[in-house]
Image 1 (spheres, rainbow, N blue to C red):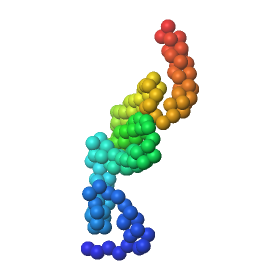
Image 2: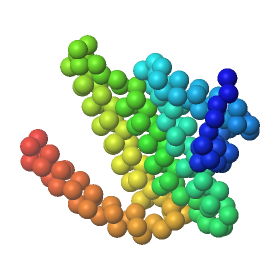
Image 3: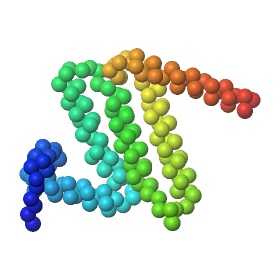
Length: 166
């Protein structure tokens, strides 16, 4: 099979970086394989995690390369943890296909629970960075400033819980 590409598509394909794909034919096969993988997604977390990792891994590699090129130290744990969280959260969402005609309420409850778990894990991760020694993010003062309202809200929640549970 041969394929004719317009100039823009040919330039895009030439610039496209895919692990293990060097030639235009290799790259087209990789693009088709990725599209097939997405279409035939088996609704399992592991496959969804691979897909999410393929989409977001490039971002992390580019950040790391830029940090190295610019001699930026420390490396950002905020970036690493956020990308990992995004990969995992996307995998949860991708692997939770709901078909309304076949869905059960329990599937909705499980999805909500998984999303609460993922969201709370990100919050905990950022709170860990706030108590870690400087050096875990580019500018720790930015993280600290953004956590002030979160901590105030957490304090209010704790007060409400104490009143409720007396």
